[in-house]
Length: 111
Image (tube, rainbow, N blue to C red):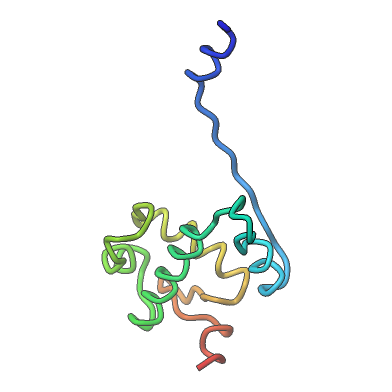
């Protein structure tokens, strides 16, 4: 039982990268019907981040961070914004022009 107590005191961090076609990635992130996989909060935050970039029609990482809604699941500072936007850039959802993040081809062609 002493081993279990030791494990409870340790902190673990896990990172994951999912790459591929946008639709395939989104289907992998979808919540299972049995509720065992829950990435809803992640998807909601990503959607709010993208909505903010679109609403602003682009902005610097700091400006975007300041405009994000307060009800997001996790707090996004300027560095977290750029880290996340760099991932979304791989899916053509945003583009970096100079130091300004703008809606990418996938967002601008859906309008």
